[in-house]
Image (cartoon, rainbow, N blue to C red; front, side):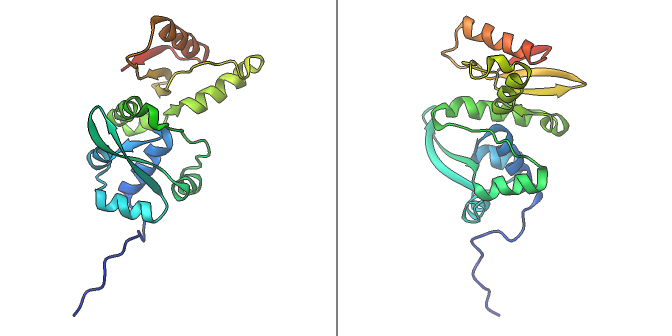
Length: 186
């Protein structure tokens, strides 16, 4: 009996796909190595997810190595709205890839129950302006993320090579103003 051609799109979102899509909503991006290592999603599966409109991929050089960068596409965002109630997505920029890949690595090192508490920069900026409406539009920077561990809010910051002491102090002040008890830097 002849076999049919393999499908180029997905029929069902698997648990692995689900984990990847959720992570992308929280950190904005990952590379194909992280998708494989932490979610068990192969490059072949990534291609099918892309053809199905859940993700988009692009090739970039990061630290001298080729990286297949994965981000949410319209279908992935809609899936997050339907399945997780997520409406505020982390925006990643391709000019900060090294920083954002490092931040994704931090996310994956956390227990899944702590990953669920992850708040990304855009959510934290919105929260800051909610607390301090008189400062609306004034933030020049913000912490990368915050997590909750045993009721304690902890700021997460991926330190870039160009960061100055003044910038780190400003981020620490913002973290304190957001109610974080401390800031973990990576």
